[in-house]
Image (cartoon, rainbow, N blue to C red; front, side, top):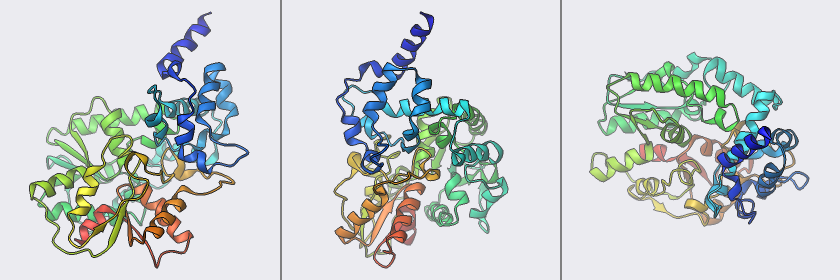
Length: 379
């Protein structure tokens, strides 16, 4: 009787009793388009199973749990405001606790515990992106740039981090960085199910951020870091802003004015964690349309209907075997059909997945993938 009561409390907490099995979550799920027929990702079936069987049993049987990108399309489509992505994260946490993980996920979690980043690189490597730049330390200015793990450790994305610095300096902003003392925000490990390590990172980061009384605003490069700080760090004192919001504000105030022409036809790919999960759609577009010479054209699937790049929820480290297609490939083909020169992004994961798709499809002579900050730095 006690076990049944606890289960009811658990399901009530997840909000699953509101599910009417309408199937809108599965119909809208981008991963459902590409998973193999032998093991499709069916979120409606998953919710039904969790309602009717012990979660431990479901977690051990559903190998497709690792396919989810936690993009939140299912949550947006649900007429009863159920959060199906939270079901996936909770089931993953059972697998993490049991230690029944794919090796690639185990390596990511271990790297975060040891190196405070998911990329398996030493802490000292976090200094590579700002080598040669003279930047203030955090606490010496009211504004702090939080670079995040991927721009700090990925060589391709060093250009993104440095472009952001260049634009902040051009705008005359007094800002600092955490440098090698910066640690992971915890976004990916939470979505992979390691809620215990996430809690530890949240406590550590909150203590550091709140410890600098001078810091009033944290500007984040990654929408994943931004979403985590904004929505999952309840005790955080400084205001958190994504760079698209920040620079859209500077441009609107006249503090930052793009002067050079960028004579390119550009479309914009909405990152799930910026758009679908935080309703930030206009700021990135206002930046792009403020650039002289730039011709802006929308993807057919845009804003809340944007197609996920397939990089979130830990999917940067997981491959779907026998996938029908890659979502990034679909996105790139759409851009080619539109005749654009550049796919603009506002997320490090989107940049990597879409750029890899361009290379894999041998389209580098026809199409570029650039972050908005890289385009803005040109202007």
